[in-house]
Length: 83
Image (cartoon, rainbow, N blue to C red):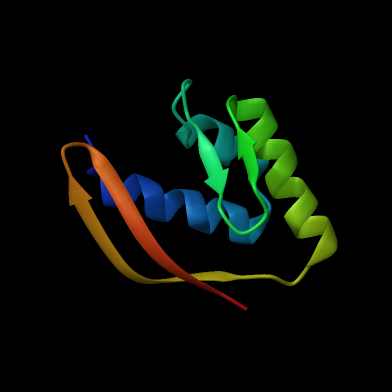
């Protein structure tokens, strides 16, 4: 079984490619996404995918690069630089 950081990295790679099916496969069914800067929050995988599609539509050449990652107790935290 893949470790949590590897799965999280796969999710960023899927976003970079616009591979929504892969993102959906990687997301936990109870995934919650919070965007402190905008105040947006998603509580379902479908909502998260739609939010991600919106970011890609607004910034079609956006790419996330993971600069740091830490894992504890099945939770991964990624530091991502978006360009």
